[in-house]
Image (cartoon, rainbow, N blue to C red; front, side):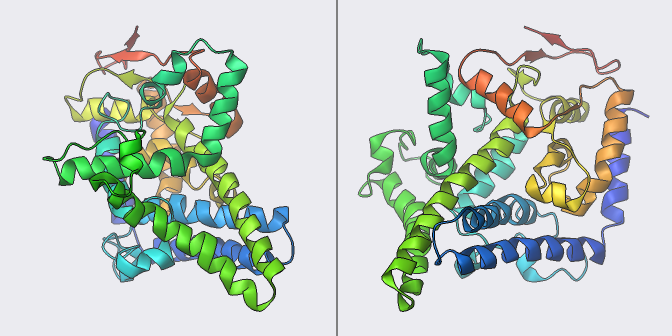
Amino acid sequence: MGLKEDLNDVRKQLKTNASQLDIDHLRKIEGWIKACGILGIGTAWIFPNPVSILLLSQYKFGSWTMLAHHILHKGYDTIPGVPHRYTSKGFARGFRRYLDWLDWIWPTAWVHEHNHLHHAHLGETADPDLVERNIDWLRKKTWHPYLKMGLVVVMALTWKFVYYAGNTLRTWLERRYPEKNIPSYGSLAFWNPFSFAGSHLWLHCLLPYVLVNFIALPALFLFISTKAAIFVLINLLLAEMITNLHSFAVIVTNHTGDDIYRYDNSINSKEEFYFRQIAGSVNYPTGSDFSDFKHGFLNYQIEHHLWPDLTMLQYKKAQPMVQAIAEQYGIPYTQQSVPKRVMKTVQIMCGLKDMPVYQQAPLSNAAVQTT
């Protein structure tokens, strides 16, 4: 037996035992998410307050990280009796986008950028989410570190709008229209609503979210008073910043740090793939559903990158088994709190630290060399 065989056995065991329990668990988590949304919007009209803001933020965060993330990865597709809306072909498709997951991010573009490019090229140059490369312009600046850190905070508060929506759309446009010269998402041409790329950005990403979230929702409260509608808008705007910060803290950080490998070459074997997913990812503390809920179930990032198409409940079961196998083969298995990982990520983004570059090495003893 080797690394590949041991991990394949774990996956086979988990997939074989998938059942109605996984769907029931999904429904429970979905219920918590919807409760946050209902309570958040239901109290937002009274006055701007932290309770409504945090509840609305958690609703937005959970709709993406727990529902969209695992369902669109086909985690529930093969479970007998699964409702169509919990499958990758039903969730957030067409009008259901407004019911399941309305965000700055267009689901179709996100599936391509995240499920295919990021997961297939984790930490490589071809990974569209390689933080160290994407933020190289800031790393090279000779500004004071505190100035850089301040800019990182601003980016974190707005990152789905300023980065993720555009970057995911750009990768999809490049695949769908290879004959077009798609500009960088950071350029003015990309944001021009009268350009080819810009028209897609406004039609699929910006306008749907703005019209529903910041215009239609507050307008519903005009029947109470103008002040109530304004309070709802204020709470929604503040919740937007908090959910950006929350998602930034648990998404950007789980493949970044001076103790997490990045790769200059492509994968050449299944063992190599498994090694890279473990050594190139970070888990946060795991345990209860409540703790997992706060982390968006992204505290099982190592297990998720090994097998993207498992359910949330299966990741809970897989975590101790994967950790034991990693320790058996001497593979670095990183599990730390979110604040510690945020600090490590900020150091990388500001150019204070560098990620180690993995050089292909024998996996018999999991030896690695770094430069």
